[in-house]
Image (cartoon, rainbow, N blue to C red; front, side):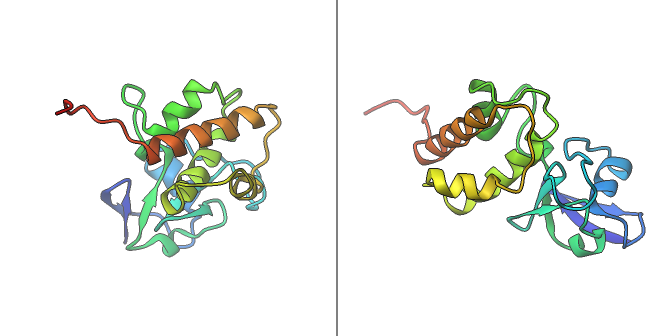
Length: 161
């Protein structure tokens, strides 16, 4: 039996070690944000974060996630309390059909965690592997920019002196 840390919680995995991580997330663990798109690592719909790096979960055997940290969109926030990146996508109305958005958000999250002062070119390069037919590309870029600003200038609830 394999163990991985999923969204901060250790989880034992019963699936075969060669099962794609995407299938384990969706079928065994009931997390449906990562989507099956192509099954070939070419569309980005299945993107999750593994130890800080964005990966295609459809082509990653679960054995490669053993004893490592996996973060999915469900780990970024909730409907009631969305995380900063999720809130930025909401504020910019960056999602249309929503199929590609979870993968794009995870790739953007990995980028912002490494480089919060991200340039437009860096964002475009990082999101390039993702296929999207909705036409909200400019809103997606604005959402990532908004999230980057939120990371760089966090708000505080403390009273001023």
